[in-house]
Amino acid sequence: MSTVAQGLRAGLGQNGSVLAAAIEAEGSPAPKHTAQSLAIAGLVPLSTVDWPGRLVATLFLQGCPWSCVYCHNEALIDTRTPGEVDWIDVQQLLERRKGLLDGVVFTGGEACRQGASLADAARWVKQQGFKVGLHTAGAFPMVLQRLLDEDLIDWVGLDIKALRQDYFQVVQRGGAGERAWQTLDLLVASGVDHEIRLTTFPAFPRTEAQIASQVADAGAKVFALQQARPLGTPAAFAAQLEAYGKAAWDEQFRQIAEQVKAECGERFQQLIIRADD
Image 1 (cartoon, rainbow, N blue to C red):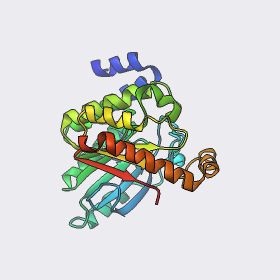
Image 2 (image 1 turned 90 degrees about the horizontal axis):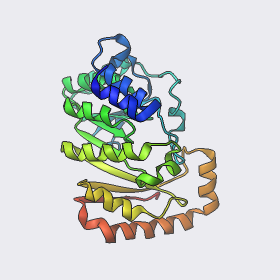
Image 3 (image 1 turned 30 degrees about the horizontal axis):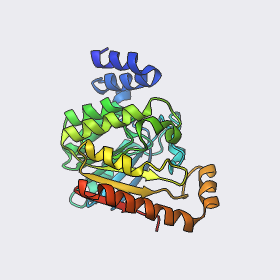
Image 4 (image 1 turned 180 degrees about the horizontal axis):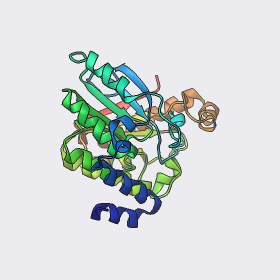
């Protein structure tokens, strides 16, 4: 086992073991660690929204170590669920769409959970002349580091979900905050294009402007504030939004957005407000 993997296994406990295994697997020739073994839950053959300004195909990878209260892809959390799309189908689609698509976005779930297989898939996509985008919540920072080191990623959409100390309230797992904010630091240091996203909801601590400020301190260039919506979320969360009331939540989000703009708007090259219109 590599020194990096040993350190992660020792320092992060069970999650470190998962990550260490992912890093070790990335260099392995074993079939289970190739693109063919990706657990792909879904495929959108043409998307204009998953990578701003790009026309892409989007792959939804199965499995996530976190359980966010507002998750809109709850069916993708279970790591035991097999994929429903074969890699060969993805390859055939991309071969047909050369010259039409700009790239491919890997999302989830948490795409970096399948680190070695993801790297192999991204490598093939790049070889075909496509750009590669990634959506991640930062659960596996060293997997992302390896992808960046190999120049396999052209753009990253990173979800920062809370201040470090507040992460458990959102993801319901321990140790998540340090990994997510570490991911932000390594992403900014890489120079790769990015968008840092924060999704807020009525019960969220009113720390949105503080989070935006810390993201700006880290050197991020693009920040998006997103209004949580009920579509596809767990029943308990959707019920909370319904009880709060759409009009009340819209007004509260408007006020939050105005505060973020006033305090941090000039610190980013681009500040995006995504309301649930």
